[in-house]
Length: 146
Ligand SMILES: [Zn+2]
Image (cartoon, rainbow, N blue to C red; front, side, top):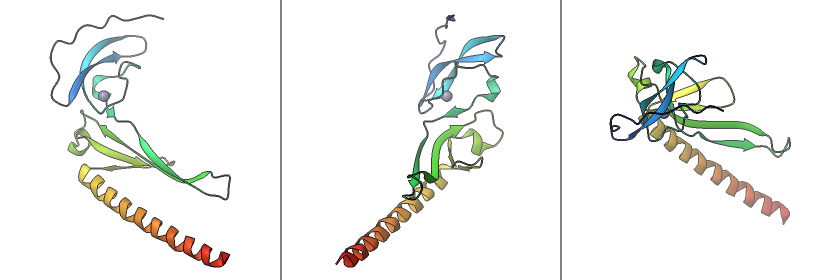
């Protein structure tokens, strides 16, 4: 195991960021440089080499799954979301912090923070509807049980 010397950061990071070591280059030739990384980013930028313009920042994903009592409680639907930004993108929506929402497919939805707020409102309304349906089903089951 080799340890690369990491130089001290030369400047203070901008508000909401920290300076993190980043491996710039290729697997055969790389060096450590410091970049500004958003405080929400959980990516280890020193783990594998990349070009500076290819660096994106990613937050910790969170998600949920819907099991079925038919099929050993395997998840039939699942969603995850995480924060991302691609500072080198020409698309302002991509270079700004935004959310990615995905499932088990290869498709991902990219949404602005305003869209995320709307999605959250919709999910809260859906959760309320699911809870109401559970309440109705519970009452029906209790009536059937006599
Ligand atoms: Zn980062």
